[in-house]
Length: 346
Ligand SMILES: [Ca+2]
Image 1 (spheres, rainbow, N blue to C red):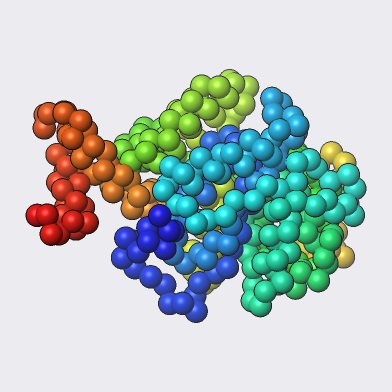
Image 2: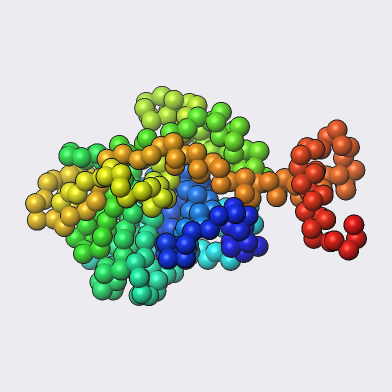
C-alpha cells in the first residue's frame, strides 16, 4: 500500500506549502525507540519522507561488523508491518569515519547528496551515529547550503558527556559541526524527557494491529535484555522514546522560544565539550513538549492498526472462529471494509 493512501485515513492534510522534505537516518536495531520514531515520521502528513537510511552502531557490544545491516533489516520489518511498500530504505555506512575528512560511499550517502541537491531545504532526522551525514558533506560540501541536520544526541551543556550517539562516531559529529550545515540539537537532557511506561504502551500501542503489536513486543523484549540496575536510565518499567524529538521539533510552534543558540563546541577526546567561541551557531533545544510529542505519536498508530485489526478479525471468522472469540468492534469494521471493497456482492 502507498504511504499516501494510509495518510489519507488521518483525514487532515497540511497546506502543500507547509510540507517538509525529510530523510530519516536511524540505528533502528540499536534498542527499541527508533521504531516508534520511524512510524512517527511516516504517519505525519506534514513530512515528505524521501527515504529511511540505516545507520551503524558499531560501538555497542554484540553487533560489531553487522550493526548497519541489522538496522537496515529492522527498517524493512517496520515498513512491512506498517503495510507501506513505497518508502525507500537505504543502507548507510557500515562503520565510523576513519578521520574527520573521510567520505565513505553508501546508498544512504548517495540519497543524502541526491536529495540535498534538489531545490529547497532538506531536513535529516539523525537518530543515531552522524556518519552518513558527515560522509555526504565531506564528499560534496556544497550540499550544506540546503541541509538542516536534526541532531538527536550529545551530552547536556555546558560540559557534555560521552553520550551514546556521539560515541558511535565522534569524528562524524566533529565534521558536521565544522561544516556550514544548519544544526538543530536535542541533547540528552532533552530527549530523555520523552519517557513512557510499558503499561501505557501496552494499553495504547499494542492493540493497534500487527504494527502496534510489534512496536510493543520488541520494546518489552528489549526491556528484559537491557535491564541493568547500574544503568539509571531504566527502572524496569519505563522507556525513553528519545528519537521522537526529530519529529517534535518540526511539529512544535516556532513561537515557543524553547531553544537558544550556542557556538558549536569542540568534541574533546573524552567526548565532553570544550566551549568554542569561533564555532558556528547551532540551535540547541532547552525543552520539548512531552505531552504533545508522546500523545500525538500514540494517536497516529491506530491509523494503521484499526484496519489491520479488522482484516485479522475477518480472516479469523472465515477460518471458523466464533463470534465470542472475535473482537466485535474489529469485526464490524472488517465488514464495513469488505462492503466498501465489493459493493456489488452486498
Ligand atoms: Ca536511535
